[in-house]
Image (cartoon, rainbow, N blue to C red; front, side, top):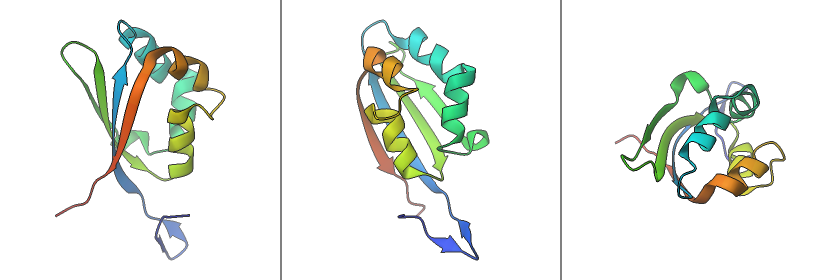
Length: 104
């Protein structure tokens, strides 16, 4: 795994995810992200208390800064290999980018 371990504990990575949504799909996307299913899957990936999100004025893009503790789960959540997120993301997601953030 690509996380640094200190004293047996994983160090979280700050990640920025930018997603481009299909036209008119913002409400469906947010409905899933706020649902019990969506929250349970997101907890497997990151510390939800540290998540910061925003949306473009035209609701075509979303951006989330997240503290990730499982990069493999993040990739699965976004790329369609997670069976819970796949149906929703196939319907709403045009594309996404993942960026690792480094403190200067």
